[in-house]
Length: 408
Image (cartoon, rainbow, N blue to C red; front, side, top):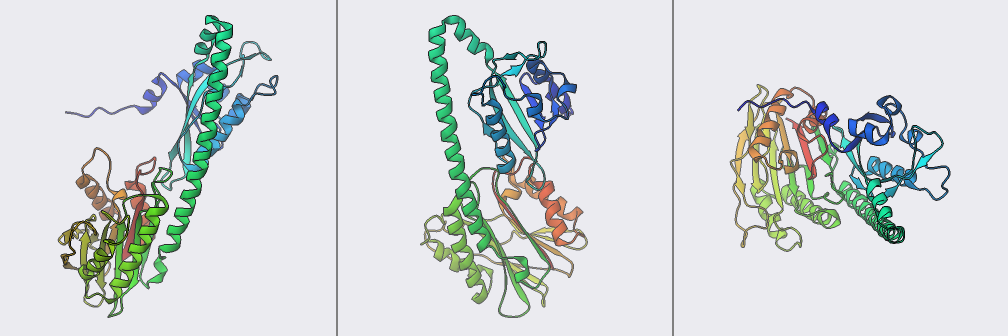
């Protein structure tokens, strides 16, 4: 069946609900027809203008707070990169036909970020549902009853908004602590004397971060390095703590183990006594620059990718085994080896880079292979940025992502 091209601009204009696109500076970038009709302002009166210059608070009502609450919500979206659903707001609007007269209006706004390739907010989708007619209908049904219902509604809305604010603050604090803990435990690529780039991208969700890790370590015998990545199930401070324990254990084991399988054997035994290490995955590679070989072993993790200078892409998938703590009794894990020529590129990553909902993992792996093949001549820093830009969803991934790129 031929796939029909979709005109998303036309879809946006035809949306039945009121939707505006705002810049991070809260300037109107675009509005759909429903927004023009619902606000009574033309596109020319909106586009390129600061939102609160067009819709200020009612100067005749000292208790008005609609503009203040909306501004807080929008700035929160810019700062956190997360959607913000507001409680019902009374936000009076000046009549376009009768300047100086303000009409009581009731709105239910939802503000959603659009993220760029670097994870920063580039636009805000400001969706508004007007419920003014519902409130007026309540007034017509009976003034006394309407006032009671309205007062109760506002009380519940304020309580909900205050609760959401406290939850956001608590989540933000835990996220900041978890990310700081993770960054303090993850090594910089300069700790090994080879051309490497590392990236970590937190998930879009407030707490769904800090389970992914990477490691680069100089090995004690010969001109060799160990390169590893892993993923701990869970999020927040607990996942960050488990991640730190497993990464440290693998670093120590890699320095004395005969090969990557033996190193993972040691870490698997350790994972049995670490709460929260259930279903944790890891893959480790030992790169020997004298012999031009890569020995590798995987514990339930997506396969590393070796990109040869001629463009051939090789998935290192011949030594796969269950996750670290998946076996009732520890057993020796498989190990495989491959060769490389100078100028090849080794790439390790976590599943946030390649897995998508409603899509098979093979699709994500093929997408990664094609991106690496096309851009294989770029230096590791540029290649890492390009891969993240091409593979991560425009709105950000729902799982955190770690990426290591090593030029061999």
